Length: 66
Image: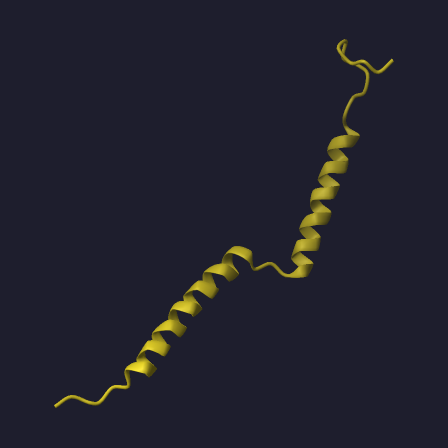
C-alpha cells in the first residue's frame, strides 16, 4: 500500500512553485534597481541634450524663424 499524502500540502507547494516562477519572470522583466533607473534616465537626458545641441536653427528655407 502507498504512503499517505496530504493533498493540501501538495497543493500549497505547487502554488508556491508556480508563484516563484512568475516572480522570477517579473524580476527579469521589471527588475531594475533605483540606481540603474536613475543612470538610464541621466543617459537618456544627456543623449537628448546632445541631439538638441546639434540642431541647426533657421537654415532651411521652409523654417519660419524670422
